[in-house]
Length: 190
Image 1: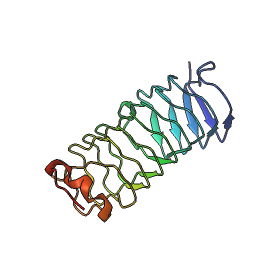
Image 2: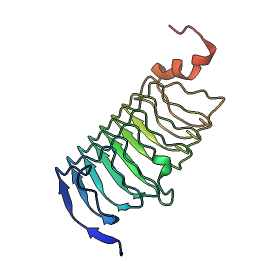
Image 3: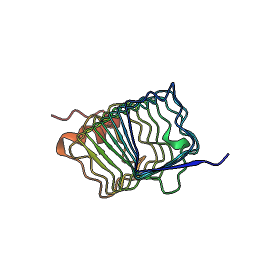
Image 4: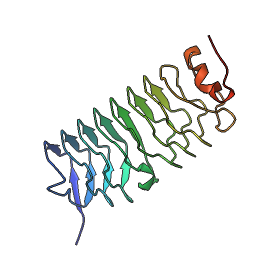
């Protein structure tokens, strides 16, 4: 059975837990106020698509391609992005809840996270060079052997990043974020 090619279509208010999203390639599509919670989105291609006010919590993305995909005002809890096809992976997040999600070992250069809740997100071994974390909560986020070179954390908070375990050359931090870089030393900074 041939996979569908869907272009320039808007999907609004659909619960894809009940009506599975057809396998195929979606280009320049917008998904607005849709529910994909625990849905299987494996083996699909999303190119230049937007997800706005959607719930993608615990969605399965095995071997799915996400090329220039924008998430705005979405709930994306516990999603394993590392199961996606890494080829041409390009994501952007604004006003999203990404708690407990994983970006393990992904190349996410220049990725933008704006006003996102990233509590307990796993960035282990990811390449986040030149990424922008603008006004993000990074409480208990895991950074281990992560490339953070030239990344911008100046307006984000609650992160714990060990400069000895991560690449941080030319990364930008605010003075308020210094405790998050020195936490392992148990210093008292006043």
